[in-house]
Length: 145
Image 1 (cartoon, rainbow, N blue to C red):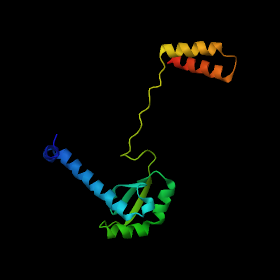
Image 2: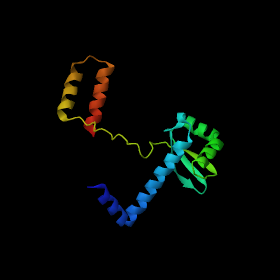
Image 3: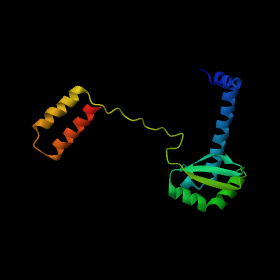
């Protein structure tokens, strides 16, 4: 589909138009935030919104959070130079991955009946050992579920 067709569709759909404007505003906020950071901190945090006159920033590193809190006055001056007037920066720890980062889906670790039988026959040939006990435990758990 051509990009102009998509844009016209989004503009005609009120909810999508509102979301499109919000996404554009967040991209602009993130760009302004990155432009205000020193080079060594770029990419380690993300501007996620605002509450009143406070910019809300998320990071996964407590060290980065501490550094951002130490630099708050300098960052506020840089933000003002870049056209964003805020009175405070609130740094939040992001326990999970940031929203734009993909999560790896869990792999299916089920074993088929032929694999279970192969492990069973292999464990029977082993002398008593931690490996033999581990195979018995694995087989018992897999056959339960």
